[in-house]
Image (cartoon, rainbow, N blue to C red; front, top):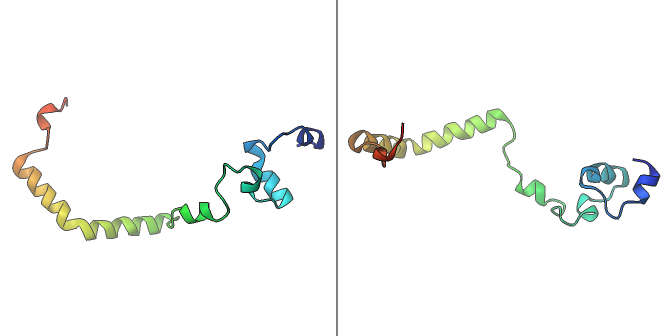
Length: 89
């Protein structure tokens, strides 16, 4: 980014917002109002970031829903797959 190029911008290009925000200390939302306000992105971001926590959450979900899953499997064994006659494979 040269000073001459920046001086010709009517608005900050989307691919430059991060760099401009870091260099100037201006919040990205202030550079482009279409971006979420400060704090909103973090609040909406998933709370689970690492693989171990994600795997633990999946394991707990399976434990909590084991009874319903087993009931579904029993129903399918007894009645067959729903809409199986329409399957092409």
